[in-house]
Image (cartoon, rainbow, N blue to C red; front, side, top):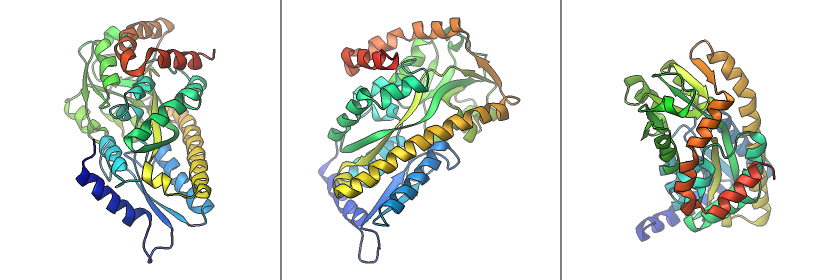
Length: 331
């Protein structure tokens, strides 16, 4: 809940930042904050978004991209976006679930297993339904970006089945679904900010972590980890959101410009992610042992994930889980 004091601050800050001054050429000046380092596909897509908006608005909108956690971690950026201190963000849906519980759906393990099932869920009715729910949190959900499927790394042993995770200290997102998943697998999950993970692994505070390949590579986790298993257990989804007042301040023609730019950036991020993954595997294969799950190992993980679905059924809704599962399976 946002206090009146913070609401007042947000309104005054928004007026100053979004509507501009006589000295500024643009009609709207928006800050776009995220935690990703600038070489990652989604950070590059944020720059693409900026270019698309500024060109197609004929300079009426100016975007100030603040990457690499310059304005804080994901949770802080979400809160700043709610208050209008930041206007655009791409937080992981796992963090957004702290504000809208039905978002837990998208971090249920092995719901989406490939790009086809991912697009069926995120770009279809289920994804749209979830985005609309964010409005009560003062956020306008536009679409979903993503960094690919998450994989597990650790320093203790190769992971080929859930039992191999027993008692391993795994760094995870500050997200209840992810914490519950690793507890179900027998691990010891610890929430930690993304920017702290390398040092945590290096110092032994945590022994493993999970991330998509782009993040594993850009943060050089392979330098401080022995094993990586390509589990692809969850699609690392980012929800592209705007401060609701910032969105509503735009005339219809500029809303279209912004929405179109979000779609271009989403597709660009996905394209870059697919291109990067094969290159990354080649570059790190001699620096970390890479394990692929067998069909039996994958089935064991799916079976071990069933209690997580049961745990979150009440918060997400059995009907929505069934709808997403049907979409993901192409039925």
